[in-house]
Length: 406
Image (cartoon, rainbow, N blue to C red; front, side, top):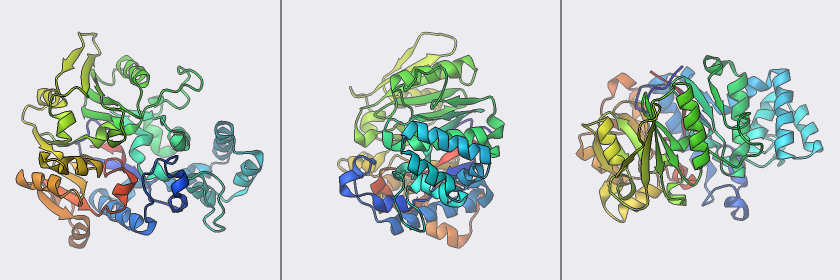
């Protein structure tokens, strides 16, 4: 399994349906759990279901993996189950009583509790919930034939990384990456309890030998330089471009302000990505220790890689719609194949900009009713309902952890 760019045809992907833990977010703890609002879970589930059902239709249901199912698979391995619980007990220190309770739970129940924090039958709260796991992009990413296990910046997301570590090391799905795992959770080369962090939304392979990494609110420069060294030493890429973006909530990851749709189309928040400004610095390092190159804008760099690239501005570049739609993930597209991508239906001015470039728009509901295949689609944006999903602060790119593209 490999991923050679963001725009190759999606082959296998990990997703996670919003779960009952999200219902336990109250205003008092919303900020701690990285939520800006109190979402309506049933509608959020329906919107996510639209998304995952169309993914299954386009790439095959056997290629769309639910995180909870993968976790249950490794819990069915007795030694792995105990090793995982021991690891969580050491890292989270949730008490011996809860540790013993977790050991006694049936594996299907345990998998749900480790994610939602809530016993699905008794409704008892056992652990803190992981409401952000719906955004599986941030837990890891595949870079050519290597896989990166990320380490979150915020305590609320660290258990996601711990669970991902065990999936990657123990689930047969990840066997092709054996010996090619970059583990930022427990890498022996990292300082104990290091505060460096890196999240998948900041890592973007723009072509097989060139990777963009955002230095952001969630990804530290030390982590980027560590990853750069690993990638160069193992000949994974030739170029690493660091994109330093504002340490602000509205652009928490690189993929919240820029994504690729095809070899000739990308979308971005123009004030930061396509126009020269004093808020963003972009520098490229090469494996061969050539002189580091500064780029005036990300647009200038992308034009060097893809000379025919068309740059579509979020909100059609019109203020205040550009700012409003960037906040609701108007730049956060995920490509199913080159020229076919997902977006939220609410970002109407961004979508109009795509229509102006001769893209077709089709709703996920319509796609399901028509039973269209990926081969039937060309220059198409698939729109999904997003009244609640967008309030959780992530878009279609955030909701996918691709592990194979072809």
